[in-house]
Image (cartoon, rainbow over all chains, first blue to last red; front, top):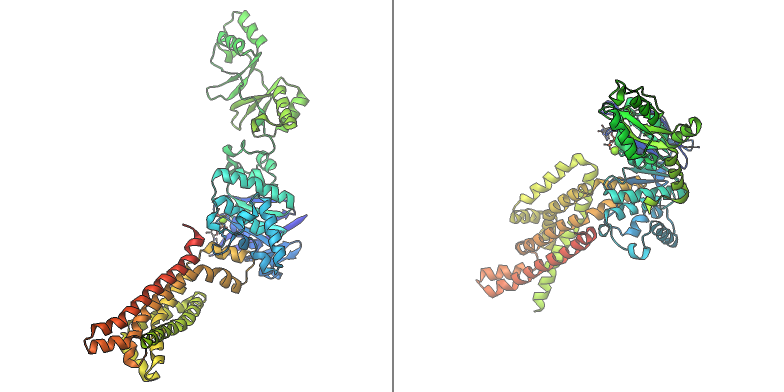
Length: 380
Length: 201
Ligand SMILES: Nc1ncnc2c1ncn2[C@@H]1O[C@H](COP(=O)(O)OP(=O)(O)OP(=O)(O)O)[C@@H](O)[C@H]1O
Ligand SMILES: [Mg+2]
């Protein structure tokens, strides 16, 4: 189901198209994240939903209604709005801040009070302790929690958030991310969230909308975006560092065994045999000086070469066999499929440049599954 | 003693009266200017000119219109305090954190609600400090207003200087000083209550 629909939306500032023929559908009850380089039009796109900015051309529909036909003030009261600067009113207490929209909608006093207490409890803040404080008496993280609660006060079906956690320290940011995701799933609210942090997008999003110069470059689930980037731009924006971390759906990176036994192709036969004995493995991954994959050799092949007393001195000169590989950014599921279907002894985990990072074996898959079934000990 | 009290009261009354009028007019004007910004340079410039007119001259000019007595004094105070009030209101309104305006607007406040729930309350401490300055200046102007037939403690000082009677001068000067100090203390306290305490630090 579509909650918000952008149809050929355009916004022109000083002759330049800040948002350029944008077409986008935001699904009901989902967490949609707008991401992209600075100045690509994320904030402008967001603000067009609650009519803080009106499009120069095109239409925006909420539940099928063209929002240009709606009264902006009424519209905004039904859409939660959270900004990076938080914007709590310093002259009002926490309770008064949360009750702004309920008051605008003339809720009776008792209903407001109950709702405020309920909201505070939802994020683990004691109502008695916090209701009558002023924003300045709260930490940044607590303030933004209130900012979120204030936006959720009248249970709006839509929540807009513009880099809400951008100014918080990493630890506070993490916990607020967890909280907003929980709240979103619990309340079923449709969230449109702006960030420039790929980790955050991957962690929170059901759908990531990567924008570039006012247009949608790619709109896809995090998994899809990571595995099938449509362009070099997407690939580059995702960047290497973002991929393996905070990846909800487990990636190969997380389940692989990083202690793959590799050997440079220039090493001698005897050295190879010694290494195999020492590490107690029956094959070696041969790499070049940059750890780029060349192939594998098994213990039998090395022994055969050794018996011949042949001219072969270097391991790289042996007949190297190809080996199944998988990209470290791929989903663990893909590695699983590969192992189940083709039954190799192991798969080599490589990056886009074929650099070896580790191996995936049946053992690593079993460990990963055990982590899912019994919980991951490293989390305790 | 009765005379001292009545003169003190009328001194206060004239000052507060003039400043109250300028507070009402000045705050309205200041708020209005934030909405029609091209007028602001003009209005603020005009009240700046008003303030450069020497107080004695101002009183004399006003006397021609309002005659002798307290209304003239009040009018003078009104004109003098207009500038600080308008200017402080204007800058205070302009200085309200733009994120508060965006939050308020984004939550669905109408323009009036934004004005009364966000802008004015957050500008209030600075507006108040303009009123405080005006009021303290007013005590001094009322002293001179005795020359245009105004009441107040200026009478003692005037008579004292005529007769070279230090005691008489002090009888007028000391209550004025106390008033000024008291006003400053009181309004400072209110300013702090409305700003610093709530904003922390
Ligand atoms: N009110 C405005 N008047 C003129 N230009 C504007 C206005 N608002 C935004 N712009 C311009 O439009 C472009 C897009 O701005 P926008 O704020 O939507 O970008 P953004 O993707 O949110 O960037 P950031 O990540 O830096 O927040 C920018 O070049 C900006 O300078
Ligand atoms: Mg932005």
